[in-house]
Image: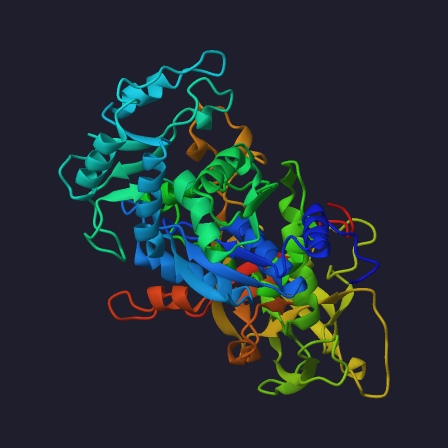
Length: 562
């Protein structure tokens, strides 16, 4: 083990279990319900479960908790598998809770025979009311003391489809006065006639999560069942079922779930945003889904880095989204190719340039790679610069272009602003400048100026569409919104700004597959799906190449701070 690495509490547990001989080999699992797309919180759980097993020479299963056919679909199964693979992990086995329906049914009958389960005819409302409160014990069901024989018969008839949905349920018989509300005769099975995405209409009764989860872990020999903190109260029930069945005892451990500023992690609410078209889909780059952040341009390496920096805690806290952005900058800064693009163009005419003449300058694709590939950057006598790089009346220590001032064009010449052209309303529409031929890079004579700005040649540049994303919500702590408030009232109206820009032609030939850096602007990722969606409007191309902003260059996060 790395002696410099400070072990988290799960690593300490695993090492103790291995040393004591409680387990011979570590087996973890990632058990998503296929009722939606995975989000950044699931990414943390994936990295943790797979990472721990990998570190200690074990294995990880993927198991789909498909016990509720009303909400589940094969589309979600496929998306989950794609997300796990994209993050860089391979599962040892692919399982489904539905694989165990026969065994779970037999175990339920075993609990009935032992007197630990019964069929209840009460309605959902009556059962809920009968549970009592934290301060008051629950009330026993009038059907609680049915004979074993009657319960077995009724349960068999439930399986055969002789009753309507909600007409009967199977409950565990535990303790209606337990301080743990989950011990007050929890539901084990309910009737549901929705066809299942894998088993079709074979079953019309389905096990509840608290009954199926521990038993599924036991069947697979899971040694460390790692859940988020909200399942802490479920652990005694997890243990109760395993112990009363006398099967292999998996052990459950809880860690703090990921809460991120300006972000919602509720699958139900994310689904509403999709269904009500507040976003373009599950993979909208503003969504916290893994497919959304992938489409935004985040890399799997940056997500794994983020999960490592967040760490494993025992108490819930909220992580600043700037840490996530810092991680993607760290990864892309080392690997991304560089290009110039002007998002808010201001035309510049170089008056002493020979008309019709053009030059080609060389720029590094990645400055970090000193011996790396170069790109050709065409130059001409008319260029675009970013409007923010010129001020007519600048403050002191302003080192970009100004009347009478000089700047270096990145990779090219030094230019001097001689004349400012305005429209009738006084808006600056064009600059007339001269260039210094002796300032050509590599010409043997070097003159330094304090400002360097990016640019593109008007004759050679390519129009592109850029999508500037901000946080989807304007409230930092979305979990703190009162229940009587609608979370959609906090949607950020500036979460997406679409504009048109001009880029150097080499950008459109980039084959790196990751986000690139628009020099001095930010990191951008080409969105091929958006291009396909925009490709025809009456058969004509509309927006051209589309680039999503992955992250700005500005870093609000200080390394080492969490």
